[in-house]
Image (cartoon, rainbow, N blue to C red; front, side, top):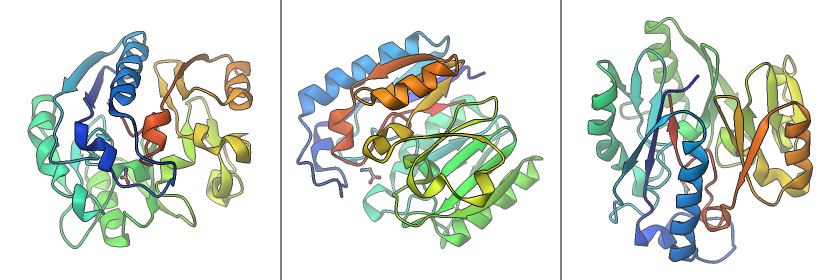
Length: 253
Ligand code: GLY
Protein backbone atom coordinates (compact mmCIF):
# COMPACT_ATOMS: atom_id res chain seq x y z
CA UNK A 1 0.00 0.00 0.00
CA UNK A 2 1.19 3.53 -0.68
CA UNK A 3 1.13 6.19 2.03
CA UNK A 4 2.55 9.18 0.20
CA UNK A 5 2.09 10.89 -3.13
CA UNK A 6 4.17 13.77 -4.45
CA UNK A 7 2.97 15.87 -7.38
CA UNK A 8 3.96 19.21 -8.82
CA UNK A 9 1.60 21.87 -10.17
CA UNK A 10 2.28 22.39 -13.88
CA UNK A 11 4.03 25.64 -14.74
CA UNK A 12 2.96 27.92 -17.60
CA UNK A 13 6.10 26.84 -19.49
CA UNK A 14 4.72 23.28 -19.63
CA UNK A 15 3.33 24.16 -23.04
CA UNK A 16 6.99 24.10 -24.20
CA UNK A 17 7.60 20.63 -22.75
CA UNK A 18 9.53 18.04 -24.72
CA UNK A 19 7.22 16.44 -27.23
CA UNK A 20 7.22 14.00 -30.09
CA UNK A 21 3.46 13.54 -30.03
CA UNK A 22 2.74 15.98 -32.86
CA UNK A 23 -0.57 16.95 -31.29
CA UNK A 24 0.11 20.67 -30.86
CA UNK A 25 0.76 22.62 -27.68
CA UNK A 26 -1.20 22.02 -24.49
CA UNK A 27 -3.79 24.53 -23.28
CA UNK A 28 -2.37 25.59 -19.91
CA UNK A 29 -5.70 26.42 -18.24
CA UNK A 30 -7.10 23.07 -19.30
CA UNK A 31 -3.93 21.36 -18.05
CA UNK A 32 -4.43 23.03 -14.65
CA UNK A 33 -8.04 21.81 -14.49
CA UNK A 34 -6.92 18.31 -15.44
CA UNK A 35 -4.21 18.38 -12.79
CA UNK A 36 -6.79 19.35 -10.17
CA UNK A 37 -8.98 16.43 -11.28
CA UNK A 38 -5.95 14.14 -10.99
CA UNK A 39 -5.36 15.31 -7.42
CA UNK A 40 -9.05 14.75 -6.62
CA UNK A 41 -8.76 11.18 -7.93
CA UNK A 42 -5.70 10.58 -5.75
CA UNK A 43 -7.54 11.99 -2.73
CA UNK A 44 -9.92 9.03 -2.90
CA UNK A 45 -7.01 6.56 -2.53
CA UNK A 46 -6.18 6.99 1.17
CA UNK A 47 -2.79 8.67 0.71
CA UNK A 48 -1.30 11.93 1.94
CA UNK A 49 -0.53 14.22 -0.97
CA UNK A 50 2.29 16.75 -1.24
CA UNK A 51 1.69 19.29 -3.99
CA UNK A 52 4.90 21.09 -4.97
CA UNK A 53 4.80 24.60 -6.46
CA UNK A 54 5.18 25.20 -10.20
CA UNK A 55 8.79 25.49 -11.42
CA UNK A 56 8.71 27.62 -14.54
CA UNK A 57 12.38 27.09 -15.40
CA UNK A 58 11.57 23.46 -16.02
CA UNK A 59 8.77 22.95 -18.58
CA UNK A 60 8.57 19.20 -17.89
CA UNK A 61 8.73 19.45 -14.11
CA UNK A 62 5.08 18.43 -13.70
CA UNK A 63 6.34 14.94 -14.54
CA UNK A 64 7.83 14.34 -11.09
CA UNK A 65 8.13 10.62 -11.66
CA UNK A 66 11.31 10.97 -13.74
CA UNK A 67 13.82 12.71 -11.43
CA UNK A 68 13.29 10.36 -8.46
CA UNK A 69 12.64 6.75 -7.57
CA UNK A 70 10.96 6.15 -4.21
CA UNK A 71 11.44 2.62 -2.87
CA UNK A 72 10.39 1.30 0.54
CA UNK A 73 14.04 1.44 1.71
CA UNK A 74 15.61 4.49 0.06
CA UNK A 75 14.99 7.26 -2.42
CA UNK A 76 17.12 7.58 -5.53
CA UNK A 77 17.67 10.94 -7.16
CA UNK A 78 18.11 10.19 -10.82
CA UNK A 79 20.07 11.89 -13.57
CA UNK A 80 17.43 12.54 -16.25
CA UNK A 81 18.46 11.70 -19.78
CA UNK A 82 17.22 14.89 -21.43
CA UNK A 83 19.53 17.89 -20.87
CA UNK A 84 16.58 20.23 -20.36
CA UNK A 85 15.35 18.02 -17.52
CA UNK A 86 18.66 17.28 -15.80
CA UNK A 87 18.36 19.88 -13.06
CA UNK A 88 14.92 18.64 -12.07
CA UNK A 89 16.95 16.24 -9.92
CA UNK A 90 18.21 19.12 -7.75
CA UNK A 91 14.69 20.52 -7.58
CA UNK A 92 13.23 17.33 -6.13
CA UNK A 93 16.18 16.38 -3.88
CA UNK A 94 15.23 18.51 -0.81
CA UNK A 95 11.67 17.19 -0.99
CA UNK A 96 12.85 13.59 -0.81
CA UNK A 97 14.98 14.39 2.22
CA UNK A 98 11.75 15.21 4.08
CA UNK A 99 10.59 11.62 3.64
CA UNK A 100 13.80 9.57 3.56
CA UNK A 101 16.93 9.22 5.70
CA UNK A 102 18.62 7.29 2.93
CA UNK A 103 18.89 9.11 -0.37
CA UNK A 104 21.05 7.72 -3.18
CA UNK A 105 22.04 9.23 -6.52
CA UNK A 106 22.60 8.23 -10.12
CA UNK A 107 25.83 9.96 -11.21
CA UNK A 108 27.56 10.84 -14.47
CA UNK A 109 27.97 9.16 -16.95
CA UNK A 110 24.80 7.35 -15.94
CA UNK A 111 21.44 8.68 -17.04
CA UNK A 112 18.13 7.40 -15.77
CA UNK A 113 14.52 8.58 -15.94
CA UNK A 114 12.44 6.82 -13.30
CA UNK A 115 9.62 6.64 -15.84
CA UNK A 116 11.79 3.78 -17.07
CA UNK A 117 11.52 1.92 -13.76
CA UNK A 118 8.62 -0.37 -12.85
CA UNK A 119 8.35 -1.89 -9.37
CA UNK A 120 7.02 -5.41 -8.92
CA UNK A 121 7.38 -6.22 -5.23
CA UNK A 122 11.10 -5.94 -4.44
CA UNK A 123 12.13 -6.30 -8.10
CA UNK A 124 12.54 -3.35 -10.42
CA UNK A 125 12.42 -3.57 -14.21
CA UNK A 126 14.59 -0.87 -15.76
CA UNK A 127 14.07 0.20 -19.35
CA UNK A 128 17.18 0.93 -21.38
CA UNK A 129 15.84 3.72 -23.52
CA UNK A 130 16.66 7.00 -25.24
CA UNK A 131 16.70 8.51 -21.71
CA UNK A 132 18.16 5.73 -19.54
CA UNK A 133 21.55 4.36 -20.48
CA UNK A 134 23.14 1.07 -19.48
CA UNK A 135 25.41 2.78 -16.94
CA UNK A 136 22.41 4.45 -15.25
CA UNK A 137 20.59 1.12 -15.12
CA UNK A 138 23.68 -0.62 -13.69
CA UNK A 139 24.08 2.05 -11.02
CA UNK A 140 20.45 1.61 -10.02
CA UNK A 141 20.79 -2.17 -9.81
CA UNK A 142 23.83 -1.71 -7.51
CA UNK A 143 21.83 0.67 -5.27
CA UNK A 144 18.86 -1.73 -5.13
CA UNK A 145 21.19 -4.60 -4.26
CA UNK A 146 22.57 -2.62 -1.31
CA UNK A 147 19.08 -2.52 0.19
CA UNK A 148 18.11 -6.14 -0.54
CA UNK A 149 16.15 -5.37 -3.70
CA UNK A 150 16.83 -6.49 -7.28
CA UNK A 151 16.73 -4.99 -10.75
CA UNK A 152 16.93 -6.15 -14.34
CA UNK A 153 17.28 -4.35 -17.66
CA UNK A 154 14.63 -4.37 -20.37
CA UNK A 155 15.72 -3.02 -23.75
CA UNK A 156 13.10 -0.69 -25.25
CA UNK A 157 12.50 -0.60 -28.97
CA UNK A 158 10.00 2.15 -29.72
CA UNK A 159 8.42 3.86 -26.73
CA UNK A 160 9.79 6.79 -24.70
CA UNK A 161 9.72 5.20 -21.25
CA UNK A 162 9.16 1.68 -19.90
CA UNK A 163 5.95 2.84 -18.21
CA UNK A 164 4.72 4.41 -21.44
CA UNK A 165 3.65 0.88 -22.29
CA UNK A 166 3.48 -1.04 -19.01
CA UNK A 167 1.71 -0.76 -15.67
CA UNK A 168 1.87 -3.31 -12.88
CA UNK A 169 -1.55 -3.49 -11.21
CA UNK A 170 -0.42 -5.80 -8.37
CA UNK A 171 -1.69 -9.38 -7.82
CA UNK A 172 0.24 -10.59 -10.87
CA UNK A 173 -1.73 -8.38 -13.27
CA UNK A 174 0.35 -6.51 -15.83
CA UNK A 175 -1.18 -4.05 -18.27
CA UNK A 176 0.91 -4.09 -21.45
CA UNK A 177 0.88 -2.40 -24.84
CA UNK A 178 2.86 -2.81 -28.06
CA UNK A 179 6.38 -4.21 -27.72
CA UNK A 180 5.80 -5.33 -24.13
CA UNK A 181 2.99 -7.80 -24.84
CA UNK A 182 5.36 -10.45 -26.17
CA UNK A 183 8.58 -9.72 -24.25
CA UNK A 184 9.76 -12.98 -22.62
CA UNK A 185 10.52 -11.37 -19.24
CA UNK A 186 6.85 -10.49 -18.73
CA UNK A 187 5.22 -13.77 -19.74
CA UNK A 188 5.14 -14.89 -16.08
CA UNK A 189 2.43 -12.28 -15.42
CA UNK A 190 -1.26 -12.18 -16.27
CA UNK A 191 -0.90 -9.81 -19.23
CA UNK A 192 -3.84 -7.54 -19.91
CA UNK A 193 -3.29 -6.46 -23.49
CA UNK A 194 -4.01 -2.84 -24.36
CA UNK A 195 -5.35 -2.55 -27.93
CA UNK A 196 -3.10 -0.68 -30.37
CA UNK A 197 -5.58 2.19 -30.77
CA UNK A 198 -5.67 2.63 -26.96
CA UNK A 199 -1.93 2.29 -26.27
CA UNK A 200 -1.80 5.56 -24.31
CA UNK A 201 -4.00 3.89 -21.67
CA UNK A 202 -1.12 1.59 -20.69
CA UNK A 203 0.30 4.54 -18.77
CA UNK A 204 -1.93 4.24 -15.72
CA UNK A 205 -1.38 3.68 -12.00
CA UNK A 206 -2.48 1.31 -9.25
CA UNK A 207 -2.97 3.18 -5.99
CA UNK A 208 -4.16 1.12 -3.03
CA UNK A 209 -6.55 -1.08 -4.97
CA UNK A 210 -7.82 1.59 -7.36
CA UNK A 211 -6.57 2.13 -10.89
CA UNK A 212 -6.34 5.67 -12.24
CA UNK A 213 -6.61 5.57 -16.01
CA UNK A 214 -6.68 8.25 -18.72
CA UNK A 215 -10.25 8.94 -19.88
CA UNK A 216 -11.32 7.87 -23.36
CA UNK A 217 -10.05 4.30 -23.55
CA UNK A 218 -13.17 2.20 -22.95
CA UNK A 219 -11.87 -1.20 -23.97
CA UNK A 220 -8.89 -0.96 -21.57
CA UNK A 221 -11.11 0.48 -18.83
CA UNK A 222 -13.54 -2.44 -19.15
CA UNK A 223 -10.75 -5.03 -19.09
CA UNK A 224 -9.32 -3.54 -15.88
CA UNK A 225 -12.74 -3.16 -14.26
CA UNK A 226 -13.47 -6.77 -15.23
CA UNK A 227 -10.63 -7.87 -12.96
CA UNK A 228 -12.39 -6.24 -10.01
CA UNK A 229 -10.48 -2.96 -9.77
CA UNK A 230 -12.21 0.28 -8.95
CA UNK A 231 -11.27 2.36 -12.02
CA UNK A 232 -11.09 6.16 -11.90
CA UNK A 233 -10.81 7.94 -15.25
CA UNK A 234 -9.09 11.30 -15.54
CA UNK A 235 -8.72 13.40 -18.66
CA UNK A 236 -5.02 13.94 -19.42
CA UNK A 237 -5.34 15.17 -23.01
CA UNK A 238 -3.05 18.16 -22.39
CA UNK A 239 -0.32 15.96 -20.93
CA UNK A 240 -0.50 13.53 -23.85
CA UNK A 241 0.55 16.48 -26.05
CA UNK A 242 3.86 16.65 -24.15
CA UNK A 243 4.45 12.91 -23.98
CA UNK A 244 3.23 12.54 -20.41
CA UNK A 245 0.49 10.68 -18.65
CA UNK A 246 -1.05 9.51 -15.42
CA UNK A 247 2.03 7.72 -14.14
CA UNK A 248 4.50 10.51 -14.97
CA UNK A 249 2.55 13.01 -12.85
CA UNK A 250 3.23 11.55 -9.40
CA UNK A 251 5.63 9.75 -7.10
CA UNK A 252 3.91 7.02 -5.09
CA UNK A 253 5.48 5.33 -2.08
N1 GLY B 1 7.70 15.70 -21.95
C1 GLY B 1 8.06 14.65 -21.07
C2 GLY B 1 9.39 14.10 -21.41
O1 GLY B 1 9.75 14.08 -22.57
O2 GLY B 1 10.14 13.71 -20.54
